[in-house]
Length: 143
Ligand SMILES: [Cu+2]
Image (cartoon, rainbow, N blue to C red; front, side, top):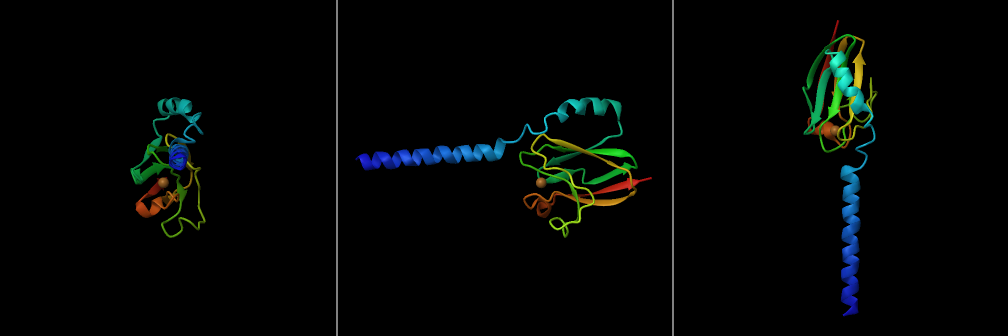
């Protein structure tokens, strides 16, 4: 009888630990760049030229992004998982070289990049194999 109780207790402790691990994975780190939220509203009101790209459902939306030289692109993670933006193709997603490389963006995080050189830039999210799920795009910078 005591043996059974002990086993149950161990099982219960195991469940609690598992739940904590899952919670840490899913929700952790969301506040890492919360400072950017205050600047977002001012930026959008002063510069209408900012192009916003949503990161959601393992996609960039839009995925075909066109900007003028000097224009800023704002990547917003609207997903429940982490994402990033690197200049690479599917073939070079993990190896580089990356022309530019954004930080790891937790859910809710934004990252902005200004394109000053005309050209065509392939982008991928190279975290957790997302580029293999179709999280790719193209940024075309025109004069
Ligand atoms: Cu991703």
